[in-house]
Image 1 (tube, rainbow, N blue to C red):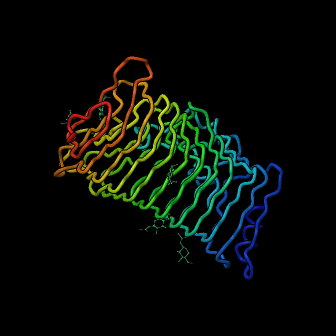
Image 2 (cartoon, rainbow, N blue to C red):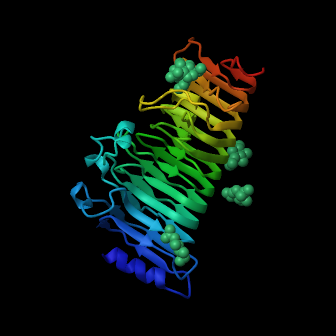
Image 3 (cartoon, protein in one colour):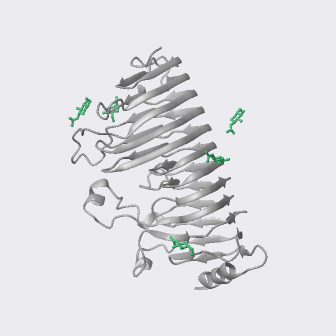
Amino acid sequence: MAFLKVWKAVCQAESVVPILVIPRMTFLLKPATFSGPCKSSNIFVQVLGNLVAPNTKWAWIGHHINTWLTFSNVSGLSIIGQQGRIDGQGSAWWPQPCLQQNVQNGAKCNGPTALTFDTCNDLQLNGLAHINSPRNHMTVKNCNGVVISNLHIIATETSPNTDGIDIPGSTNIQIGNSNIKTGDDCIAISGGSSNISITGVTCGPGHGISIGALGYGGYDRVEGIHVSNCTFKGTMNGVRIKTWQGGNGYARKISFENIKLVQVNNPILIDQFYCPSRVDCQNKTSAVELSDISYSGIMGTSTADEAINLSCSQSGGGCCTDISLDRVYIASTIPGKKTNANCFNAHGRSTHTKPTVKCLMQ
Ligand SMILES: *[C@@H]1O[C@H](CO)[C@@H](O)[C@H](O)[C@H]1NC(C)=O
Ligand SMILES: *[C@@H]1O[C@H](CO)[C@@H](O)[C@H](O)[C@H]1NC(C)=O
Ligand SMILES: *[C@@H]1O[C@H](CO)[C@@H](O)[C@H](O)[C@H]1NC(C)=O
Ligand SMILES: *[C@@H]1O[C@H](CO)[C@@H](O)[C@H](O)[C@H]1NC(C)=O
Ligand SMILES: *[C@@H]1O[C@H](CO)[C@@H](O)[C@H](O)[C@H]1NC(C)=O
């Protein structure tokens, strides 16, 4: 209640830029939504202390189960971390991971997302530590103009569904200089997002950076995603694009540049047959089209033999076009062992690349 009360005062403050300072103490917060629009076009939140979620599921009774802390419809918000910490205390939720089957059966298996920004312009997030979320640590949804930097996002490798940053339906986003170690995707970009730049991020453990899964029974578009100067350490995947069979739309103008791989299981992956539920996995007559996707300066080691897997759909009239690889060198973690590439129905070219990608022009 104290937080909601102070938020109301900050949000209603007119004149100068209001500043909300969360002092160097630990605060236990029940699920809360901080709503706008606010009177001032800029609001600063300075987090010096720890915000801690309840460590049992009971605290969510009577609340929306999907989220813990939400900022909704607030523009010009800057949250500056300075040693601040957001602790989701998620371990009570982890034993029942949300499998795709359960989602389709409508089961309430998901824990809450720790921090959600829904509908915003000009958001800045800097310097916070985000730990042990019940589900994904952060969702940036329907936002435009976001700068995220110097974050530390940490949950154990075995914690299910604990994505670092999820970005659905958002545009003009920059993510820089951050360290993300979790049990699921480092950063996941989904439908309706465009113009996103990710640079200087270290991922791992976790599942790497992913675009998708796109086209689950509908239309999705993703455009202008640039991932550069990132390192993947011990992740299940490196850079992954996944689409379901049967969707429509596109993902295009995507680049992965200057990427360092350290013991990554599937460094480069395009999967247009994504279907983790293994229910209704038939091939369909349409697919989200992938085009203008480039991988350049990607080097390091893979723990699997298959370092590159470009598995493109045959439906939808040329589903993977203008795919390019240049200066991609991926060796096995086992000295002397060869890596290889699986390439199915992908069109484009590869230069200075090992392993050789046979279905692309050399
Ligand atoms: C955001 O605020 C605007 C302006 O008051 C309002 O029209 C809109 O419905 C709000 N949107 C959401 C998602 O709350
Ligand atoms: C893309 O985002 C950057 C900032 O991240 C901005 O400077 C640029 O104008 C945006 N481009 C488009 C086409 O919106
Ligand atoms: C990535 O690193 C290179 C070399 O250090 C640098 O020239 C380039 O500007 C960096 N890219 C971004 C987007 O920061
Ligand atoms: C490559 O990806 C496709 C599509 O997901 C999958 O069926 C195949 O098993 C993968 N190849 C290997 C060797 O893992
Ligand atoms: C879908 O198509 C791919 C590529 O032709 C093939 O490998 C796979 O077996 C098909 N899957 C099903 C369920 O028919």
